[in-house]
Length: 90
Image (cartoon, one colour):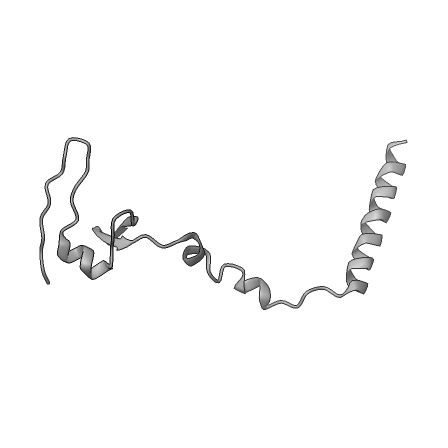
């Protein structure tokens, strides 16, 4: 384990030591993430929106899409329920 130090400015800014920048592959303009885990703070290269959301829809792919017949039946049922509700109010 290696330890590096930086000075915190009054604006809350700190310089990331060159060894850490090299390890994370950071360059000017890159974003970093401060992650709290188990009472510790870790610095990581910030992930893009694509990286953060990759696989989010995977759980929906496990269920088959409804067939056209099933969709038609659901639409007919919704229309019938709406018609019944309109009839109750008059």
